[in-house]
Length: 203
Image (cartoon, rainbow, N blue to C red; front, top):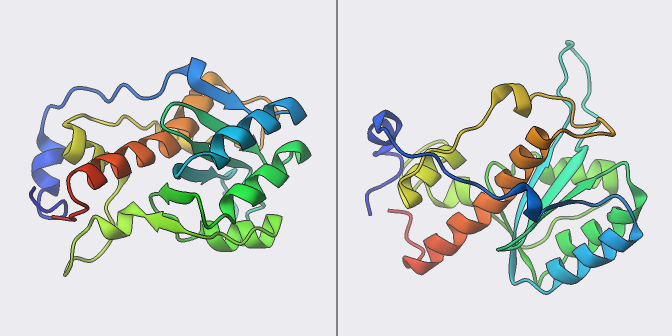
């Protein structure tokens, strides 16, 4: 396997087929107690889950983010989205994110630890940032999700900047937002599984 950092230009230039992503039917927005209990059972039974967060963007100088407004956790087959404004999901988030039995897999998680601690009192445990481990020794920066999808699956991950910078604090998230958020978590777990299958080598 070639190093992801060295292969960046070639992968970006390649005409790759689109990454299909998770289906809308396999995404659950946790909005109440029953869905929270269902999510808890599925997530706490997993050995590893995909993990990411979304926050409403800040546009004014000096404006402080009040995020994360959405936390995404994914098993191999489903994605669970937790609006942090919904109290029913918060105990589930705390249990899973602080668990040392469930590994949390994601990309670019540098700010998530402090934000979750400050906003929700959650101390992240057993987290693996693939953006760090996939870059290989001697390379600066991190590997992004798009590069990893191209490298491991030979596909192109399409990410809408408009959706990525939309209002994640909205009480009604659109289908586009649900798919964007769920895929960020789910694809991280898929890449982790493939990385493990290939022998956990960064290059």
